[in-house]
Length: 128
Image (cartoon, rainbow, N blue to C red):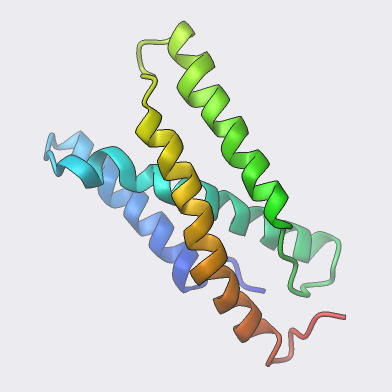
């Protein structure tokens, strides 16, 4: 399993793009506010899966159970949309961010996960 596959690379490039638009005060309304939230769970899931595949499964494909993705979205929602706004003005509670975390799960399950399974179960990376 490779870390920088097509989708993970897209997540990272999207994050860089959004950060640059914020640095240079370029407002692209919906992209600027929600794109990074949509890709947060898929990016963390892919990174975690990659690390586990390297450390525990000898570079064999590892995919988190769906329940782990849901737990991740709930934890992010609680921390970033409920708890952190109470302690820092850098964070604002936004229910649409929560929706985006769960849209990210759907994206990962419907697009990124099938890509990984197709790519790594038909090559030298066949899981045992």
